[in-house]
Length: 142
Image 1 (cartoon, helix red, strand yellow):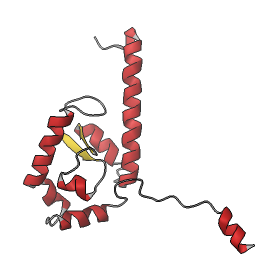
Image 2 (image 1 turned 120 degrees about the vertical axis):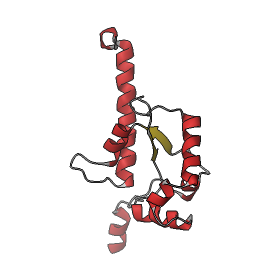
Image 3 (image 1 turned 30 degrees about the horizontal axis):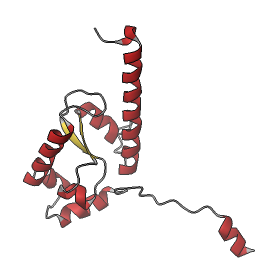
């Protein structure tokens, strides 16, 4: 019967639906790109170029609250994204929304998988709020 019990066990789902599951892997890619740290990467001409492309292609407003965007959020840390070949997973955000995505209520930095989940939930909630406000004239701002 041991073979049968092994068949009945659910398959464990991969922990990496897309992107990376740890900041250690992100830091490895940063080193492969020739930077000593993620901070050095963010201070580089490469990142400034990528950042400008994101603002130009996706606009200068927060993808969650529509306030003016001040930061770019990495939804994934793949070589293509970090090198600028793929800007799809990069999103303009305001500082407040970015901070609420990256940090839990107790101040703990969230793991990339948690951040992606928070991003999806926040965008979904913001879209719902905007739809509700458009339907309800009394909720529209003056």
